[in-house]
Length: 198
Image 1 (cartoon, rainbow, N blue to C red):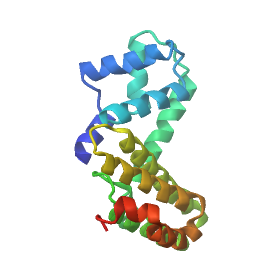
Image 2 (cartoon, rainbow, N blue to C red):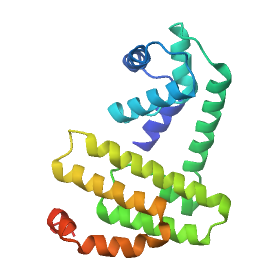
Image 3 (cartoon, rainbow, N blue to C red):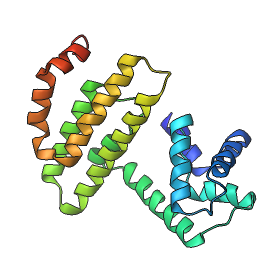
Image 4 (cartoon, rainbow, N blue to C red):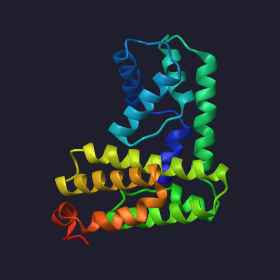
C-alpha cells in the first residue's frame, strides 16, 4: 500500500481524482492558488481517499482549469512538502521505521511508537527533535482523521481518539508522558473503554 501511495504522491491522479481536486477548489470560491489552498486540498484528499498528491501536481491541475497561481508560494510549498517526504521516508532505520505506518495504530503499537520517539528524543540533537515531533504530529493527525471515518466501528474510532490524545501529550510534554500514560491506563474511563483489548 505504501508503494501505491508513493506513486500517487509523485504521479498525476486519474480523471476522477482530478475532478475532485477541481471540485474542492471551486468549493473554496476558486481562490488564488497559494500554500493555504494547497494544504486544504491535500488534507481533504487524504481524509476522503487516503491519497497524497504533491502541491505541484495539485497546482498543475488547477492551472489547467484557469486558476490564478501564486507561483512563489506554490513553489515554496512544494519544496517544503518534498523535503518533508524525504525526511519521513528516510532510510535511517531508527527514523524510517517510525515514519512509515501503513495500518492504523493500535493502543499497543501507539505505545511502542511513543516509546521509540521518546528514546530517540532523549538522545537527539536539537535539530532532530523537531523531526521527531513532526512524526508524532503526522501520526496524531492520521489518528484524528481515522476517528472520523464511518467505515470503522465505534470501538476503533474511540481507540484512534485515545491514540491521538496520547500523541498530543507526548508532543506537548514528552518527559511527563510515561507517568501520565501509566495513570491514564489505570483510570476507570480507560478500563471501561479498553480493558478487553489490553
